[in-house]
Amino acid sequence: MSYINDFINSVKDGAIASMKAHGVLASITIAQAILESNWGNSTLAKESKNLFGVKAIGGWIGSKKSYATYEYYNGKKTLINDYFRVYNSFAESIEDHALFLVNNSRYNQHGFFSAKDYAGQANALQKAGYATAPTYAKSLISLIEQYGLNKYDNIKNSFINIDGGAYACYRGGASGINLIIRDYSNDIIRVFAWVDSDKGSSWAFDLTPLNFNYTLLKKNTSKVITTRNGGYSFSKGSTYKIVVRGYNKDGQVVAENQIIIKVPLK
Image (tube, rainbow, N blue to C red; front, side):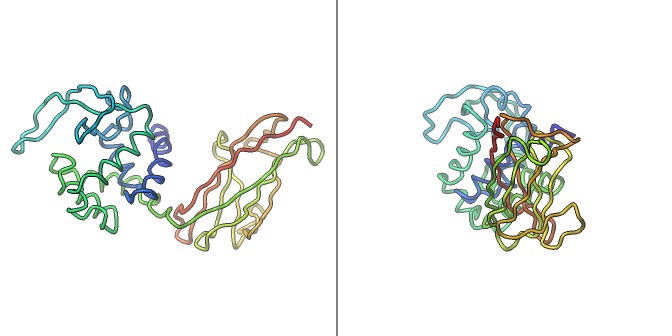
């Protein structure tokens, strides 16, 4: 379903940044956002941009708002009202979620930051009391495995550096772009690139090109593209976001990057 991919795409970059800065696995951040906000559809997420159900406690001095919520007391699910933190954006919510975990010693005491994988971090969250639901860790693990969210955990030391330019006309008058893979980490064997707004179309690079549709992947690989998805060409004076994604030998996404390229008028 499109809403699944749309929501994951709306939070994954922040989750990856949080992982690199604070050590919270991206898969855990995304799974918690899904579970706590019901794919961004909860009233708390829509009104207050609060993806994780973080309450206005722990010295919080920002905006707050009261919402109805369920808690488990002695194994019984009970409806209560409590104050929750209010954010200006999902990105702000993701950053504060990581800081909430970092600044609460109980998560470190229960092995959250020393856990080696998403299962370890999920179980540590439950042990530390992040949520009162008895199946909280199991629910997170299930979401991660169902939607393959752990692929975002591998984006740590991998990278793709890109560059490029654009031409108002090229080869018979068609405007085009020149995408350059300047550098990439050794674990990457294949790269796909596409115009962000184009669905179902990409340009491929591979260490061992499978066919003529692939360009040999090497440092400073340059590829000129004049045709987009469905035969559309690049328009003079328009700006395009080119997204690139790198895969390792196991077919996992290990690095992503993007570049904004403007086609000149002439």
